[in-house]
Length: 598
Image (cartoon, rainbow, N blue to C red; front, side):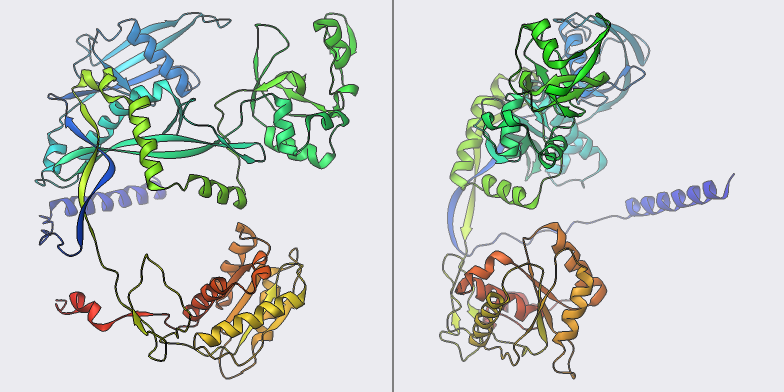
């Protein structure tokens, strides 16, 4: 036995022993002493739905393997499984498929006396697709007893692997029909007629969908339903898509595109699936590999039938009687280096955008998906009525699962906000916030640190005078909060393409005014809060240089008179210097401190 194998075996053995010890200990879950009583009581709706009945008997788990040299894609596996169900391969028993390699049934399947059966399945021809044979292997795995999840809900057992298995199986049954009916992205479903997608720019649109899952509640199982979102390529003509990405009118594309536009377009288009519309009813589908190096007008290829080279433009005239209008655009290149003009292509629907998304688009996604609770609840109710339709789901019915279509109502309590305390010199040093916010005007921090050693590093091309004005306004705000600022900061202009670490080192050196104390903080102006340079700045300041930094997006420079912005910066700076921005009134902590910790 090799040394590495021996070490691995030893490590596995240790892990196994630890696992056995943990499971051998008689764990006792702390009993909750009671429920809260303070606050105004009222009823609220939740995005949870009560499961009324569960399957009465055991469920049966089988392994479902499609024997091919290359693993079949999920959509094809679902297609084969669905066809087998229609052809009564499962003997009339309701069976669901998880999309990977497991199927579950409410009764044993007719696979003979053995625990494994091999079945030849022939998918019939469809359109121009020929019929195809597959070998499907079904293997018996285990019986699943739902008693463990019932015991867990009743509080008589801990959360074990058996409970997790039961929940996974129930979720497979719950989501089987929606996943077979609608477009799937991870755990979400995206019905085509749900809502109009929002265009984000750069050839990306945001679609909203739904996700649902079964979760354990207090003495019951519930279905949690929520809205989700994902980015897709818009289903449109490829010409229109190019126009959207490059932000150009379609007519302007007749003049062609620049090299930089071509690089941008090629990055977005790579691996996008398209179909062509110049062959009548026959519309073959392709995946884009790249763009041609030349415009369509100059592209030649070898016509094997005629034994000569021919231009793409002439070929379309001769073969399809079609004059190409956008000859200055490149062609898309698909498999076997075939050239296809952009104007005869269409982007296929339902394609998730898989490439990285910049921070601006991420911010737009967050903004679009933040909706008011009332609107979110209306959307969820629409999903239950129009898409999930629990009462009409034959899979749920056959397994004996019934779900209440009404949202669960629970009792809530509105607690009084705590009394916030500031320095005694403040106007109204103790007060109770309203609606979750309050004004810092005439408020002094209860604990401050004087600011002496600080500087400003500019990673933008903004005028230094604008930064100086911002610094003066910030100093004024800090003084108003009770923080003495004894020095005006040095301002260090540094090119964004330069060495950020070097810029920070210079800024630290310039900040050292009082040699008796360390540098306290560096303010850094950045073009935008992107992963670069923000992440690099924080990595250097926190782990390499050991000096706090406060990044400020350069757009804020134009808001130097914004009291709210300056007050928020003051809060962050004081905390990073070791100060305390506010506290709770002493008696507010009695409920925590009156009982000693043993």
